[in-house]
Length: 135
Image (cartoon, rainbow, N blue to C red; front, side):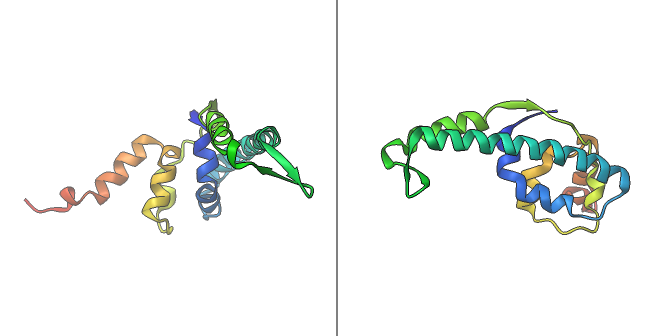
C-alpha cells in the first residue's frame, strides 16, 4: 500500500498500542510484518531529521540545536520528507481484531487507513445510529 511517511511518524504510538493487542495469529503475523517495515522507515526518518538538525542548527556543548532563525526552514524541510509517499507492506487487517479491545476514537481515526475497507464498512454499519433505529 502507498502511505505518507507522516502517517507512520505521527501515529507510531497508536500503532504500537494496536500491535500489543492479543489478536488472532494470522493478523498478528501480518501486523508484525508491517510494524517491522514501519520501524525501518522510522529509522530512516530519524537519520534524515538528524542531518537536517546539523544542516539548520548549531552545536552547543555537544548537542545540536536548531537556531530560531532557521527553525521554519528546518520544519519545511522535515515536512517535505514526511510528505513522501512510500510503498509498504499492507497487512490487510480486519477491523474485527478490535473486538473487545479498548481504543479511543482519536486513535482509531489516526490508523483507520491500516484496516481493510470491506471490514470497515461492516464495522460502520454495526455502530451507525441510523441502522439502530426502528422504523
